[in-house]
Length: 194
Ligand code: G4P
Ligand code: NA
Ligand code: NA
Image (cartoon, rainbow, N blue to C red; front, side):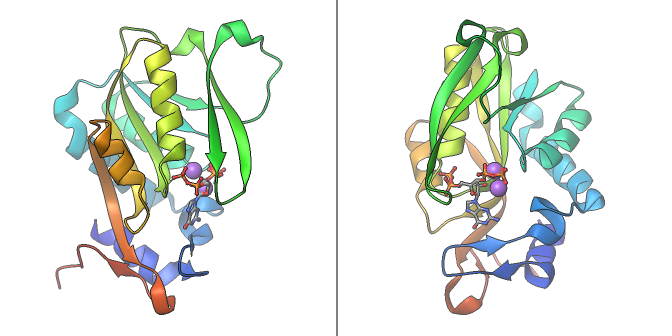
């Protein structure tokens, strides 16, 4: 997706060989026009899938998912990471380890908002090692629902997240695929046509 690749190059910054900072348009300040177009692109890619619900994880997954859900005309549900006051009986949950933050999060979704009838599109801002997406898939399975696929804004293709998801049989659609961040330079797997 050209507008996204341009935003990454012009407004992102490479923090290390492994970490890309995109606070300027995705993780802190949000470029709403870009989010609208990201939503449309997810819909293009999953339009044949009869999605009934979009599922993401707070907080940075919400903006790109919101636009996709709106375009699809289905509800958006976000998994919570913080402990809530809700009793465990009333939620689906999964343990998600964050390498970036070196901490374990218990993600939860209320049983009221996912059911066995749902055909779920999972969306997240980043795909690194795949733990967040696999946790969301766990939650979908626990609900007896089906996962139609995983939509990712920025995939770090040099990490193994996509491989893990594909091994489990899931379709992954990433709008930008980063081959390398080495030498403080972003190299995409599929370079922009010029
Ligand atoms: P994984 O889910 O794919 O296994 O990745 P990991 O544990 O490494 O990621 C943990 C958090 O860091 C996630 O956000 C993920 O989106 C984010 N992340 C991973 N790699 C990068 C990167 O290169 N750049 C940026 N900006 N973020 C990255 P989170 O903890 O869920 O936080 P948030 O959604 O509240 O922002
Ligand atoms: Na995230
Ligand atoms: Na994040």
